Length: 321
Image (cartoon, rainbow, N blue to C red):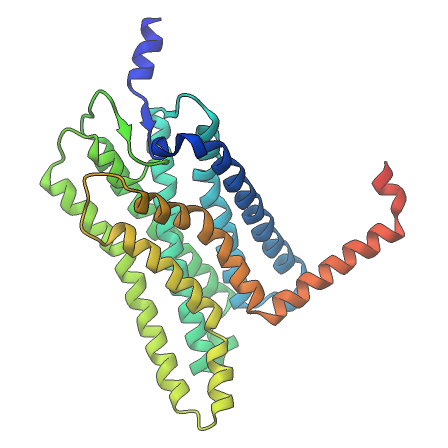
């Protein structure tokens, strides 16, 4: 019994949805539906890109990696959040919280750098169309993805130990629904100024460096598009970037509202709304944006659906078995 009480005393307690106790079952149903939609859409995109040979290009390679990253990102946070919505004790162990934060930072930061890599891909496609295939080789694409993952890994491995090295309050109540940096630091007794400075510096690195690279890519794109004489030509050139630009704007709008604003000592309904949008809605909307704005992906999805229907009609006995 003493061992069990000691284990429970080291747990963190999520209280992010405590003010919505009467709505938690409804939220569970809504979030579960959104989560299943996110998994199904991202899985469909990854599968279609892998199967359809016409989509074996750098742009769709990055989209495939992005969809896989979104799937992993939701797996880190959403299943635990759904369990807590219907559980009486919404707790996570000290180690579990550290692991969740580490993977959250790894995937979130690598996502930002991956968007920067996709921005470079679009920049080459618009500004150097004749040399596109020779520049965006498979090796370069793999190196860009690896660099994105290593950047996220670097941030996760540096920030997580700094956050969890401090002693914590006895209550350990996190005003959130997952182990993010700010709510965990709020229940720490003290944090060294050097540690805080490193965390802020790494946060700026993870958000502002990719943003700077994205801005540079789109400045080159804008300058090149403005030199096109016809309006139809400018529209066609810029339309190749519209889906990526929409995803970038949504990603950085949510991330900036959460991580690049003055700190607050208390959790609010606005914080919950932004965090839910960033955690659940963004991974769902990203594949929808790319699917709705991209004729090739829509055509490949329709082709895959037709193949499935034809297979089901030709081999009905397999389904009954």
